[in-house]
Image (cartoon, rainbow, N blue to C red; front, side, top):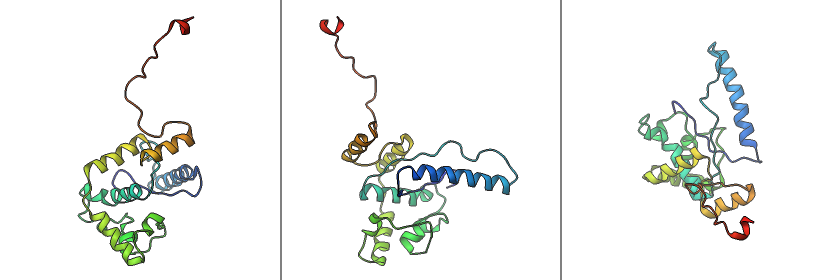
Length: 180
């Protein structure tokens, strides 16, 4: 994209995405500043991330990312976007940065079936609610998935991983005994 990048990553261990993004930011900024004789930061703000639930949610994110340049009217077909994993996942063009996720591998019994299923999945019409849900979860950095998934994450973290109820918490009624 012209003003942002989407990365769909499956970390090997806790904290590795944050360390990767920090290292990438440091090295890439240094490279661009040296190459173009400039100073300062490149990024407008820190990166945003959200946890993604199982296959259905993950594949929705794949589709969202692959079709982003199409929605932005940069290209008519995701295969025409140079900086896309569509080439590896749908067309079989080797890309050392793209590693097949188990959810992707489950799309077919063999390589060609997976690619064909992936192409069909990406090219299926995208529901506006699905696009908005992904954007909302990413912007707010909430876990994207089922209520069961969010509850499990919340138990692990000991804090909310999804949207909180809007408004102030209700006041508990003050009884005579609690006032004394």
